[in-house]
Length: 169
Image (cartoon, rainbow, N blue to C red; front, side, top):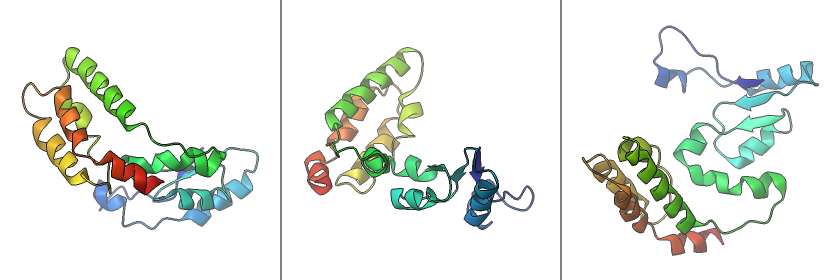
């Protein structure tokens, strides 16, 4: 059972306000786990870092990074090291570029638009050198008629991957 630690107000708040205004009540989820020790209870809501997720795991069986993973997906590169004790490995940026360009090409061949994919990628390199230019290219060029994988490759070229790898080391 995954439990969101925030009550949603069905009247009076917009969906955006429902993500901020009602307070998170993590202890309530912890109490549920204490009452149901033999059932999987995972927590969701407002968790912004792997350290926060780890702290929750002292009380529940799982912790979900929702918006944090969507807006700053690079956070997920540390999961295996933080939770499973695996040795940190350098991220395969060229592999990512090739995989996403191939995925985009297949999507477009089936009648899709590049913007359907790239709108979910704008936060991919949040905080890295070149991220602003990456976002600009995706936001403008990916929605132009006929845009293809070359737009992705152009956007990826804006990122200073050497600096990103040096920062991670």
